[in-house]
Length: 284
Image (cartoon, rainbow, N blue to C red; front, side, top):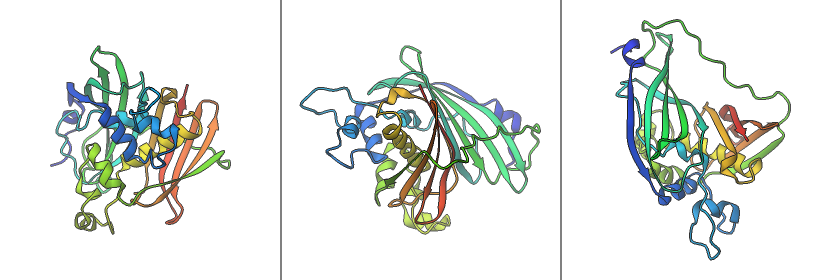
């Protein structure tokens, strides 16, 4: 069934209720690779609350991406969907445990053409139990089987362009062979990331890492290089997914710093592919 533009644009769900605990916060940090060195005090602060010297457990900013699993504006019934982009604006630091609500609504629908698919952007606005804004999570899906419908001729905004000069910083971040099996426990249990036969049926030689895990890895990289492991420094984190990461890959993160703006891209050198493009983090 083709996309009904007016119906899709009108979709919204308000006041969806969720809760999370410090266990969820630590699992997410561990699932994006933090704590691999059990003596690294900077990363232990995100994965371990049991210390001889009391300290506050820290929350990785991009935990906002999994704090309300399944929050959507409705049954969109899209075909051949891939995750295209994630853009999170952080309004208030996330608590280590909370009752939250998510207000979901469709922002835009673009028709790329009958043989090119459609692009759907929607947002989840997360609030705490006092109604205070925590984060606005904008999700972009590419529905490869849904192009060629009656929609206004709107143009998508141009993505952020990284500088043309050589990167100011480059770091390598290793992923584990079993990392997708860990990350799926954060909420996304799509068999594409865990079932070898399903992955082969989808055209991949083996299960791929979740795009949102790669997104978290880019946040982790900027946390350690430009934010001094301070999650409250993050104001926005945006990334476009351009190619899959396989568990066990080494992700190379290239970064450019211009004031409080960090541009970034990620690649896997061993396979010669760029896996994240047009990355932007705003610190403040």
